[in-house]
Image 1 (tube, rainbow, N blue to C red):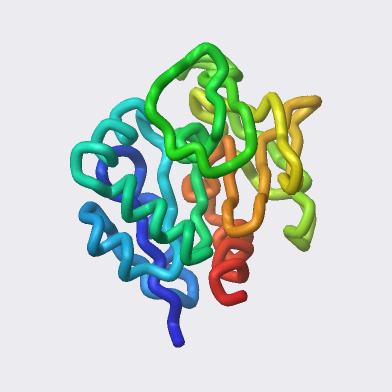
Image 2: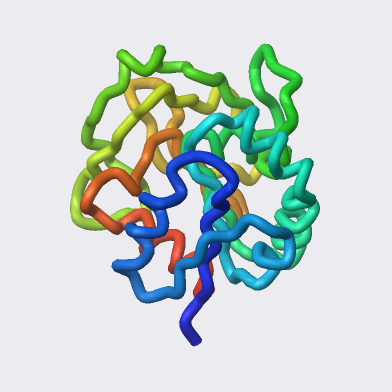
Length: 191
C-alpha cells in the first residue's frame, strides 16, 4: 500500500515539501483540515512562522487531529518551525506548541535571515555520506530528554533528532535535490 503523507499547508514552505515527496514512493497531499490530517499515515509540519502555524492549528482544530495522529503512532516530521512546534520547551517563549517531543529548542539560534547558510551534515542513519543542509533562521536543540536520539549536530549544536514516531530537523531538506531524509521518514512510516 502506498503511504499517504500529509504536508501541513496552513503557512510556510509546504509547496517545496510536496514537490520533494512527489519524487518519492508515496502519495503526498496538502492538508489544512482536521479530517484531512487524520487520513494520513505520516505528517510533515513545514518551516515558516512557528507562531502563525501554531495559532492556525488551534483556530482550525488541526492541533487535536495532530495529537490523534500521534496517539495512533503515525510518524510526524517537523522541519525548522515544525521542530519548534514539536518541542516540549521553547527557550524564553510561552508560545503555543504541540509539545510532543522531549526536547528544548532555541528559536532563530543561528541568527537572522541574512545569516542563512548551506552546509554538509553527517547524519546517523542516512547512508552515502553527508547531506546538504539549508539553514534559514533555524532553531537548534538545547536539551534532549530520555528516548531522544541525536542524529546530527553542527559544531556543538543539535540539529536533527528522532524520538519514537517523531522526527525533527532544524534545517530544510526540501530545499535541496537530495531525498535521503524524505526516504528516512518514509521508512519510519512503512515500519
